[in-house]
Structure formats: structure tokens, C-alpha cells
Length: 114
Length: 113
Image (cartoon, rainbow over all chains, first blue to last red; front, side, top):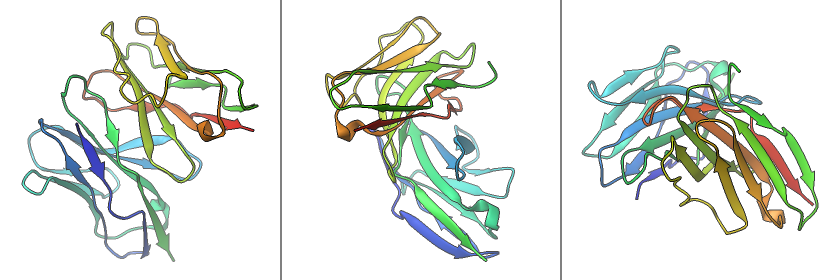
């Protein structure tokens, strides 16, 4: 069985400061990892994904995440956040364990303060 | 349609009634997922359909919950004898392939009085 742990339920950070949202996973099979974002009053949308290849993946709005197999982590980082980054961020994992169901973490609410 | 469509967007029902929630995935998407999101909580996996394969029902919380999908088209999630703890937003997502990006609908907000 697969699982995802997001250790921080809420992360307040000042504008232009760096941020790291933590995600750890558990799986007995090869994994594919994702970060989804849910802006206030909007639906979930993909932020970035790791399928294979380079372990460092980036999004178009400056976020990056690194797949670390030895630490079973996929932490999300941004060197300088904006007010508009305020949202809930969900880490997700899938991999073939009979089926390809996606398992989501409980989410981290990022609040960027002026 | 251009995106995943869910209906109704809001449903208020009395405890004990049955409800049906509908999901219309993006055309051509073979994978379809249902999740439940309780207030302030994460996404709880309910069920996964992939093409004509048998669905993965491992997340359905009780036998009051069931879902159907005909081929690669519309899916219906049915909750029988609703309870107050069923109150949540029910999200549907579809994907073109098994490890592809999930496209989410806006959700169906269910309130059980």
C-alpha cells in the first residue's frame, strides 16, 4: 500500500521569503510523484510532477521539487514567495500496486503574509 | 466539454435519503477517480476506473457507497441512506493515461441535515 505524509498542516511565511513544504511517501513499488495546488475558491490543478529522469522538477511559477529516493521525500520549495502563492498544496503519489490509484496527502495550507 | 463536469454543484439532503452525484470526464480520458474532501481535510480516495478493467473500489468507506461508469464516459457515485458524516465535497478527476495529470472537476458539495 502507498501513503503520503505532509508534516505541516499550515505554513505562514512572509512575502519574498523562501518556503519548503514537506512531503514524504511510503511505497513498495516505483513511484510517480505530484504536487497539486488549490487556490482559494478554485479547483485543484497540477503544479509539477516527477515521472522519471532528472530528480529536480520545476513549475512555471518558480516552484521546484526534488525526488529523493533514499529519504522517500518530494519536498516543494520556492526561493521567494508572493502573496498570490497563498493556497493549499497537496502532494500525491501513484505507482502500480495492482492499480494506478493516486493517493493524496492531507495538504499544507501556505499563507503568505505581507 | 473542455473540462471535467460535475453535477449537482450543491446538494442538501435529509439524513436517510439516497443521493446520486454525476461526473462527466474529459473526452478520451480513460481513467476516472472519485475523492471525498471533508472540510479542512485532504483528499480521501474512493474509487478508480480505468478503461474496461474492474474498478478499484478499495477506498469506498461502506456498502452504502457505490459507483458506476459505462465504458469511458459518465460516472455516477451513489450514496444510499446518507448520514451526517457523509457531508463533504465529492471530487471527480479524469486522466488521459494511468500516470498522467489528473484534471479535477469543481466538485459536488453534499450537505446531509
